[in-house]
Structure formats: structure tokens, C-alpha cells
Length: 112
Image (cartoon, rainbow, N blue to C red):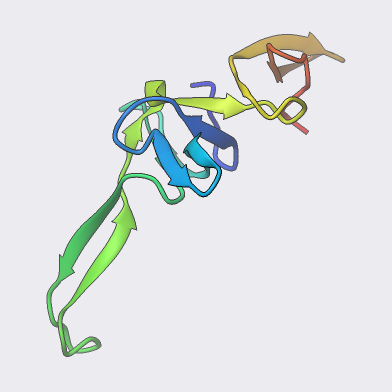
């Protein structure tokens, strides 16, 4: 999987792909919080929010409704190029004997 935890990504498909701002309609961006490679899903900050009903417990005597992010498919996001600030594909190349990820649009190395 080419997306790692901590990457800044752009949502390119799905219900959260566009957000309306004062400037107009923009693509939704966010930081990857968790990656599930076995199911090819990622959790992105502020995207695909769902409401979960919490049962009352001894610590939390009154039940509550929690809003949290749910996983989305990794094919619905693209990495944000750090140089051009546009969505880009990811490639791998050898640098000093190590395999590193790089942005195909600008050639910037993503792994530090």
C-alpha cells in the first residue's frame, strides 16, 4: 500500500470528496490517522464521520452519541504533492541503497 500514516491526502471520490467554502467548492484534504492494508482502507481526519451510540457504563453514567471517523477505501484518496499542492500518484525509486516513495508529479521524495 502506497499510503502511510501521517500522509496528507486529497479525497477524490465519495460523499466527502468536495467541501463548500467561501471561495467555492474545494477538494477535501486531511491527514491519514490509520491504515488497514489487509482491507485496503484508510481513516482520514475529518472525513466519513459517523455517529456511534455509547451505552451507559459505570464511568460514563449517561449514554452519549460520539462522532468519529470511519474507514474509506484507499482508492478514493490521492497523496497531496508537498511541492505543487496538487494530488499526485506515488512511485518508488532507489536512493542510496534504500527504496523511497516519491511524488510522480514533481519528483519530491515523500519519505524523510
